[in-house]
Structures are given as C-alpha cells and as structure tokens.
Length: 342
View 1 (cartoon, helix red, strand yellow):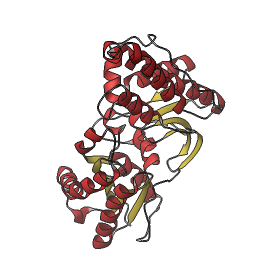
View 2 (tube, one colour; view 1 turned 180 degrees about the vertical axis):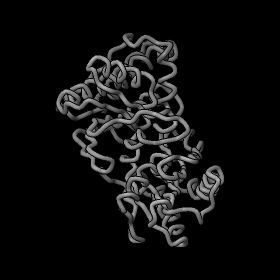
View 3 (spheres, one colour; view 1 turned 45 degrees about the vertical axis):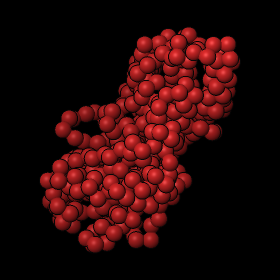
View 4 (cartoon, rainbow, N blue to C red; view 1 turned 60 degrees about the horizontal axis):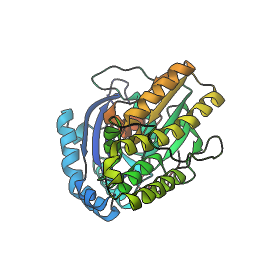
C-alpha cells in the first residue's frame, strides 16, 4: 500500500446498550455518533434481549450518520472495525454481523477490537483539540459497569492486567447503591451530582480487605444495604431526608477503595504516567481524587474527555488504527466473545 494513501476506518461499538459508530482518518476522529437506549430505564438495568433488538434498529442509521458527518462514503473506507468483546453476546453479535458483512461486501480488511483495550487507548484519540498523551509504560485504572482493572500499558497493543475485581465492578456498585436508594438507572451520574450537595463523612461503610492488586465491591454494597434497612425500620423517610449525604458517603467509599489500590500499584510499578478510563472515570470525585493523588506522588495524570469515558466508537476506532498499522486483521470466521481478557 502506498504511504500517501490515507487509512480511513469505520468503527462500530455495540458491546452493551449503546449503538455507536465512528470514522477515523490517519488517527484523527472525523465522526463519533452514539445512540443510547432509554428502554432499559424502567427495568433498573440493561435487559440483554431488548438491547440486541435496539441495536438492530439503530445500527444502520448510526453508521450512515457517522459517514455523513465524516464527509465520506463507504467506498472511501480502508477497513471496518468492530467490538469483538467483552460484552453482552446478543449485542456483540449485531455489531459483528454488520461489520463482517460490510467488510466482505467492500472487500476490505476486518479488524476485531477488544473493548477494554479501546477504553485504555481512548487517551490517544485525536479530535479538534490537541491533547497530551501518556508515555509508555504507564499504569491505567480501568473502571466501568462491568470491569475494574489495573493495567500496565507497555505499548499501544501490549498490555498486562496486574489487578482486577474479585466480584462486582465499581460501576455496578454505583448502580446497585442507586437502586437501593430508589434512584433511576443508570444511577452513577445521579449519585455524582447529588454527592456535590452532601457530606461524604456523614455515614461510614465497610471497606474491603483484599490482596494488594485486587478489588472487591460486594461487601460495600452489602454494608450499604444493611445500613439502610436498619434505618428505614425506624424512619421510613430516612433515604429521602439524607439522600445527598448518602450519595456523598457511598461515592466516597467506592472511590477510596479504588484510590487505595491505585496508590499501592503506582508505588509497586514505579511509573511516571498514570491514567484512568472507562465509564466510571467520568465521575467527578474520582477524577479530582486521581488528580490530587498525582500531585501528591509527583506523577503525570491522564483522563479522557468526558465523551470518551463511556462506551463510544471513537475508542474502538483509535485502537483499530493501531491494529491496522500492525496489520492485525481478522477473517470472516471471527466470533464475538462475551468474556474476553486483554
């Protein structure tokens, strides 16, 4: 291939309940479209069957919108990328099937992207604003609804998971705590907002004791649930009367657990650059706490822009860009995997 031929990739993300498509040209994002699914709100969580049906409805208009925003046609594409996993199998199948069919029809390469690698490489997304990027090796705390991991990034496509949760993920802990308080799904952003008006020291909840690089959130959820059950027995309006303080206190507990583990890992792996990513990295208390930790330890801190924290196709596109340059392609036999490690 000639060096002056641009690398233009269409990327599709459908791992959970957001249908997303992005176009990247020579490493720069030209379009990033996301269609969320409101249908899950009344159920208090994502319903897999409803998610896959919504992806089928959304994927064509979302891809078309991305191509139009980028000012290109499908014939300008160099490759098609898609999220191969981890995620909900029904949702992944929609994106994979569409990407495989389009790549086959256009006779261009197919790139299978790991969703979690995408979150990490979101730090390297180039758009209209120039931003600093971490230097290798760096340590990343990946926090989302389905995963909580500590990852050492040695190069764009060389990563090592050095710590993970033993049970639930941080994002799940936020959403379950919100559900216990009667907040709508997803509860994480609501807790973040209400916590700003509350006292983080109003209530104390149990912090888990687990091995150095491991996380655990099931005990925090149980502690929170049992506390509220006891309080509501004596005052049925306890939650509403103390909602802001409850949000601030549970948020403080979850973030403290994350930061305690992150601090130990930073000291252990002795890196100069540290980062966070994933949906929970949009949490303002976590972002500010990591910034303070970086100052204290004299480390360079990197956090993606808000729109690149939650699930999006731009992160799949930038990962696909590096895979394209490495000639890391897949054939038509590739299948999505609900469980997939980095």
